[in-house]
Length: 339
Image (cartoon, rainbow, N blue to C red; front, top):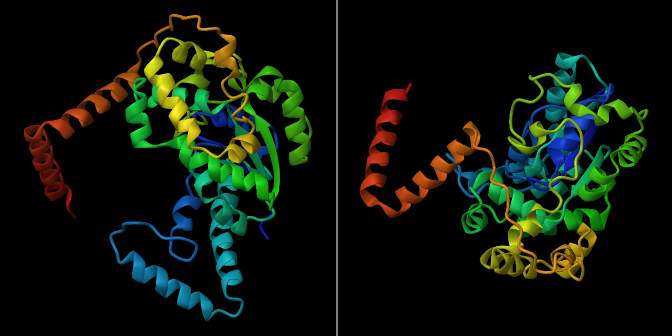
């Protein structure tokens, strides 16, 4: 057994996981960092699940691995131990490289989609489940990555319909040691909730970690994760709690689309997720139809890149000539870069 403890932070994209990761990483005993995406590809090697498409015969590979595993002395138990050994080498050596803290924190939102697999590999780990109001999450997702276009965001990745049912099921089964916290509660009372989190992880409460922006260097801020919001603040803030209400109050089309998306999620899943259907629209109802002019986001390099990608991707879809030019450039690059 590796000489460290594993901590997984689970949540949807744009649900506040980067903020909480920064707080936890500011603790003297916890080592976080950029999203490593170690377990997601491991989950799709073929025994637990397989990819839909791969540069090898993934169907044959999956069946062959299952047959092979059945020949092992302890069958699937040996396979889970092998997966654990692979991860233990990477996580433990990451800790060594960073100074030998005893708790390794992995915050990778895509892990939400393979939680049963991760629980098999790390049944003794601790899991923090961070949930946020579903519509606030989707609004942030669409505005951060798709220039506020809800339709394109949903077509690209229907995060509420994909993530909420699997996280709700994980919360419902309680097969591992987990702690569920809502984003809204955390940002309103960060001291109280961070103390509870430290107690759950079994580490001393260090209130200075809440001021994460004052404690981390630029190296920690690199990599995948929140490219916008978390860098604007040095500690949890309630400034984004009502943004979705302001947006939907002034946009009937977006409101209609969100109602349709929420309606497709099971009532029991929304309830255990922390946002029952009977109360999910209350913040909007409390606004009493007041139209609020939203503040426009300040343009930066990241937002300009996203706008260009969205425009060019849509243009390539509609314009056959432009698509043909891109295909030729792609082919030329393949030829020039071929080893």
